[in-house]
Length: 201
Image 1 (cartoon, one colour):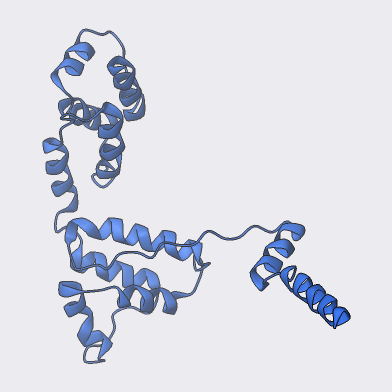
Image 2 (spheres, rainbow, N blue to C red):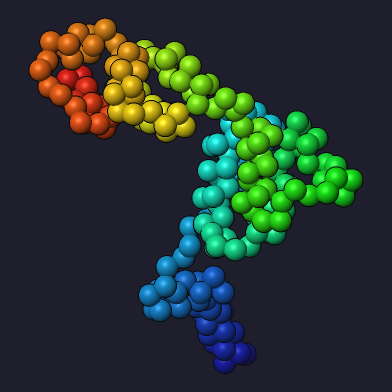
C-alpha cells in the first residue's frame, strides 16, 4: 500500500509539470525567434455617413494589412467590407448582393471607388475648406489642434500658404498675437505648427 501511495504521489507530481499546448507553442515561438502578429481590431460598421467614409476605409486598410490581405484578396476584401455595411450603406448594397443590379466593380479598387462615389463628399474639397475655416483650437493645446488639422487639410490639397492662414486663423488670440510679433518664417505647415507649440510652452 505504501508503494502504491508513493507511485500515486509521483504521478500527481508528474502531471503538474505537463505543459499546456499554448505554453508549448510559446516556447517554440520563443526558441525559433518568431514574433506573433498583433491582433487586428475589427473595423466599425459603416452606416453611410459621408464624413466617416475616409476614416472607415482607413480602418479597413489597417485591418487588411494586419491579416495579410494588403496585396490581392480582392474578393475577401469586398465581402468583408460588405458585411460591415448598415442602414443607408446597407440599403445601397442590398440589390447588388441579391444580384438584382449588375456589379459595377470587379476588384477592391473598383468597389472602394464606388463607395466613394456613393458616400464621399459631393464637393469634398469645398466641404473640407469650410470645415477648416470653422475649426478652432479652443481650450485644446496646439498639439491636439495640430494633430487634427493635417488629416482634414490633406483632403483639400491646400498649398502651405493657404493652409498656414487657416491653421493660424483657428489658434487662440494669444498665439496669433505672439506670431504677429515674431519675425520667424515657416517653410511648411509642420514648421508653423512646431513654432506655435514652442510659443505655447
